[in-house]
Amino acid sequence: MIIDLPKVIGHRGVKDLAPENTIPSLYEATRYNIKWIEVDVKISKDHVPFLLHDELLDRTTSGKGYPYNYLFNEIIKFDAGLWFDKKFVFTHSPSLEEVLNFCTNKNIGLNVEIKSNKGKEKENVNAISALFNKSNLEFQYFFSSFDYFSLELMREKKSSFLLSYLIDKINNKIHLNNIIYKCLNLKCFSIGISSYLINERLIREFKENNLKITVFSNKCIDYKTAVDLWNKGVDSIFVDNPIYFKKVLNYNI
Image (cartoon, rainbow, N blue to C red; front, side, top):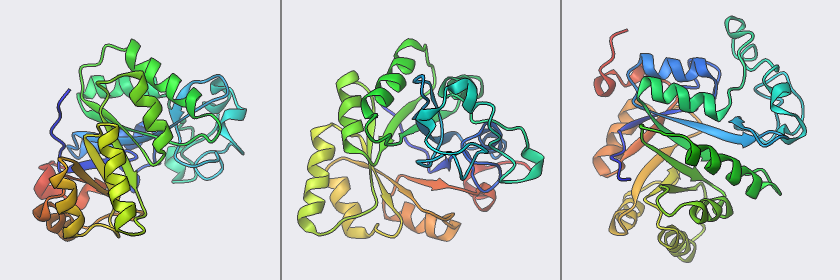
C-alpha cells in the first residue's frame, strides 16, 4: 500500500475542539475537511483496542488507574468528555473498531499510534493487528509508535503494514544514525519528529533515506510555522485546531 500523506493530520481527532480520542473529536475533524486523523490506542483487560493517550485513565476519563485492569464494557461506561466541557458529558472512549467504522463511513485516512502498554506490548499489537487483518478496509492507514519494540512486533505481523517511528529525542550524530538505521531496518515509510527538534539538516537526512516526515507538538502548531516546515520538505503536520488552516483545508464553516 502506497500513500501520499496530506499536509494536515488531525491530532487525536482535533483535540482543541472536542475531547481527544473520542468520536466527537473525530467528527469535528471531518467538519473542517480534514482527510486524515491520528488516534492513540491501548487495550483493555479483555484485549479490546480502544482510544486512550495516557498511561492512566485519570486525566481524560472518570476512570482511575491502568486501563488493562478494566474490561472494555467497564471502560465504555467511564465519562470521557466532561473533563473537556460539560456539553460532552456521557461521551465514551470508543473502541478502535468503532473508529474503523467511522473512517469507513467518512472515507478518511487513519494513523494509529500504538501506545506502549509496558509489559503488554505483544497483547497490544496482537489485538490491533488482528482487528485490521479481519476488517475489509477501503480507507488508507498506517501505524506509528515511540516504542520500537511495538513496531518490530507489528512488522512481524504483516510485511505490508506501513510503519512510522516517532522520535522526541536525538542525543547526537551517532544516535541519529541509529534512528535512521532502525527505520530502514523495519522498512518504515515515515518518521515522526517533535517540532522542537526538526531542522533543515534533519529534513535533508531523512529525505536522503526516502523517509516521509511528519511533525507533532505538545501545543498546536501555528499556520506560519506549518508553512515554513512544508516549504522545507516536511510532509505532514499534526494539528490540534484546524481553524488556522482554512487556506489548506478549504472548509466552509
